[in-house]
Image (cartoon, rainbow, N blue to C red; front, side, top):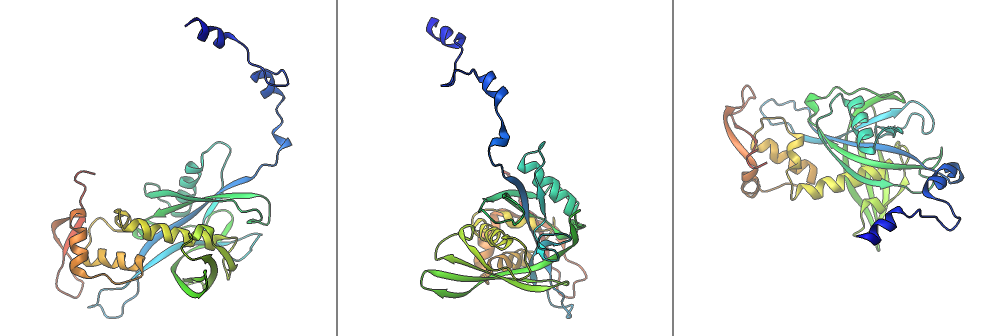
Length: 293
């Protein structure tokens, strides 16, 4: 229409009389404080604990990949793998790059968790962290420390409430690994998310990474109830008992076998393969049911 053509041809000017091209030419981004943006990776896997009796199935343990910081700040403390987002990449691209650098794998489950932006969370400068959760099969991973890390290691991780004072809950994150054992203490309001918690005792953990880890656990446990996330932690073939133990390990509680198998039945498909050389009667192997996916 004629009136639309006239509007399109009209040069728009702001209150200072500038066109958009003139405004952009004179714009000085340095006039405004700008944060650095980082990605922090909560990388989970499930591992077998050592079992002396070969006739018993090994217990499972939920593990988290952490790096030992090789420089300031928090020199010598443990932290989540991660790094700063480069000017040429998105946060998703930065997360996948960091994952590849730390674990050597790229095609794994990865989802964005939350953006942690509290002032003062990093003593260097204003740093916002876009956190991600990754789920991997540890048997396919070769971990290696990044440029700013002295060492990388798997830690068993547990999150449990230690005390409740009125509406305030005190939670402990307990980390156990070959290189260290320590805990981080968090506080949050009842029914509040760990994204809104605060670190009251870092223990041997750097920055506010306790909040990020606790929130990652919270997300994982929540989504386990209605998604097939657990299969990203499994090898291609597994027994139903192994799968159940992974669920129990993540949720931190036992599950009735019959009820679990009824619930999981649509998600798995039996094979003609069986376990071998495991010191007990062979068990049928299953895989994820990919039909309809």
